[in-house]
Length: 317
Ligand SMILES: [Zn+2]
Figure 1 (spheres, rainbow, N blue to C red):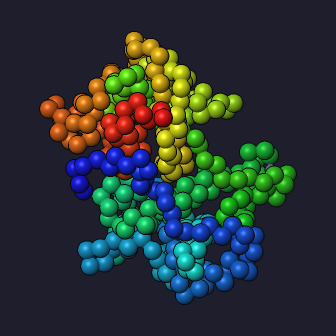
Figure 2: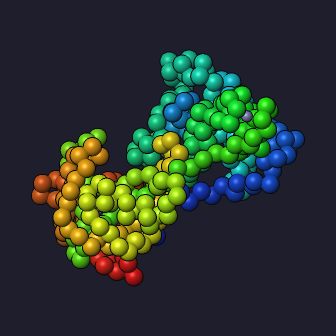
Figure 3: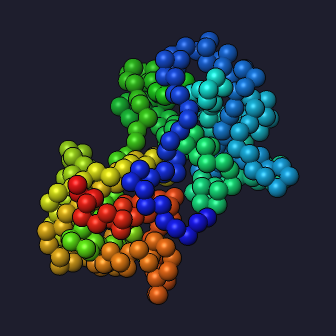
């Protein structure tokens, strides 16, 4: 991987930029979906719990299984129609819990978490968006087996894009949790924080879930105020990234800071401080004298910081 940060204003973010056409109009047609699953060009991404199942052959990983290969791996609890890649159908298959354990001892398949797959580039980048799609929706199925309205068991329908309750007739749709991730900026400086779970030299943007009844801008201002005590005014949207851990959408923003005193919420952050734009550049390029770093290009935080390094106050332009 290059040491040069990608400072482009339209970052190529991992897990986004899918080439798959979701073909949502096929989801309600069970006969059509069955025919697509039997298609010779059908490909299946197989998920076992939180891990992705990969074929391992001749020192290479392959995430795409034929229908017969997917069936041979183990019985699927749910199969989701992801869409069409050109004309080739793509599905996500979530294994029964009992089908995962026997895979661990096998030499022809490996179970690896999606973050590691992305960070180490062990599959072609074009597989990351459908793997993220499959992992997020299969994770939703795994945790929504019962109706939140009446408690009855629910059933997957619409190619896996809805669960229906046979008892109270409620329809349940997959959810995505919005997370705001932002960089408070004052002139040539900005605030970064460190979570206790970060590597000791890494600093990143502040982040938190948007709450019910909040706009993105309001969530950004509240989170910055809660985490570091800084009051923000203008909020400028930058880019977004699907983040299937388990099912978030990262909404990247720059925020104009009106105050500079930091009051750090120690329950959220180990540390936070102001960084000069020049120092950020050294961190992005991994040439900081104290070896301080920012998150890798895989993460949207890298690009939010990179845009400020590149453009300064023009990020609000
Ligand atoms: Zn119900």
